[in-house]
Length: 116
Image (cartoon, rainbow, N blue to C red; front, top):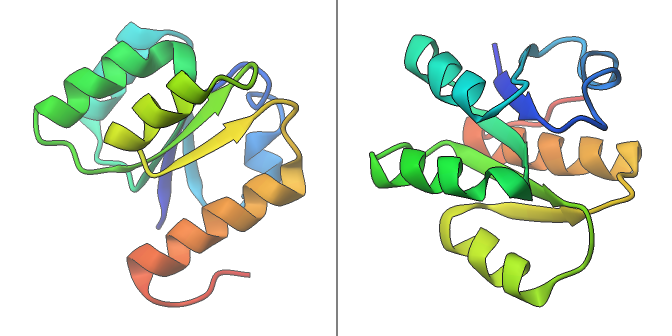
């Protein structure tokens, strides 16, 4: 089963409905991210950009999990930094259909087949 860890307040109430067939955990702060990633291996992280230092720490420790950053506003510096350690980037407002397309793209890329 595709496992997703989400740290983005605007998605907490919607994410499980968007992806009912995926195993989704919600983190409420950076410590939760570290604790959850210690307990479980994920296929995808969807995190707010404000958690960049935590994600950088994970990546430096060898974590190769696909990461989608979500930012509160357009900032080219954030985009550049995000792609240094992450795989995708979205700017709010979050359009759920776009998020589904991106997540399904990464699922397909990881597992080499389409997810409907």
